[in-house]
Amino acid sequence: MAPARRRRSAAARVVGLAGTGVALVMTLTGCSVEDVFYFGWPKGGITLQSQRMFDMWIGSAIAALVVGVFVWALIFWCVVRYRKRGEELPPQTRYNLPIELLYSVAPFLVISVLFYYTAIIQTDVNKLPEKADVTVSVTAFKWNWEFEYDGQNGPDGQPVSTIGSSDYIPVLVVPVGKTILFRLKAEDVIHSFWVPELLFKRDVFPGTEYDPAAENFFAVTVDQTGAFVGRCAELCGTYHSMMNFELRAVTPEQYEKFLVAKKAGKSTPEALAAAGFSGKDLYATTTAPFDTKRDAETIN
Image (tube, rainbow, N blue to C red):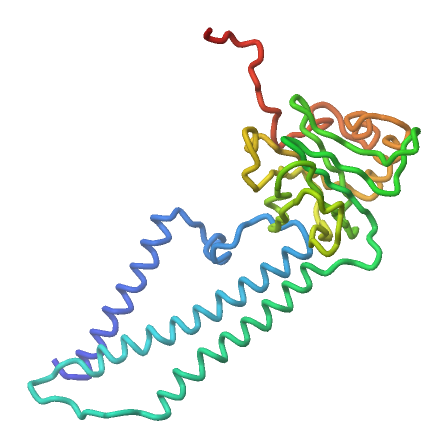
């Protein structure tokens, strides 16, 4: 077989093995074609901020793949081009200044670009609006949540709120397409406010009293309606795993009807009914209260 033909045959085998490896990885991990192009990023981002983070992730993954493919191509090319052909040693080179400069400077350029875009996106995600459309004060306590709608007062003159209990999952209602500012504080220990679909979470500290310097403020703009489970993401005690709530994203019209009902003294389920919900949708649909089994027999 001619040397050129042998080289083409070896290269074809390498490409075939690489393709088989990729197909095998996809099969064993159960990934669909769509999942592959997420490059490990969680699905379901529902805010403008999460989309910016997604774009950053995809750009970084593509850049990493380009570098990886380039390096793999060089490795395979060297394996095929410079494989052993006899007992004679190839020419020995002490150094190669252009190549050494390339692999010294290129990583710093890559790191600089990634650092720049990371800083830009992080600043954008953490940016607080001068005036939010909706402000929600979040109070975390062992082991539930209270949500106050600032500037919306009920018949008693106090801000309307929703508070969870052992048999009620609190539903936090927010409008889509509006800037929502969250102010966070804890009554006892450190908790963490987390809605997985926001692709963002923030710890909730006691004693901060909504202090902006403590970085317990953040703002989002939800861009799709739906019900999304919320959780405490900080180990806070015995019932930490049951410290859930629901984020209910509704249209601005539904949100206004909800607020009118709440300001009239209605409960959250009644206010959701006024906003057009019915049946099981009057309560949390993404999670359920913890069954404490208080009526169960105990062993003396």
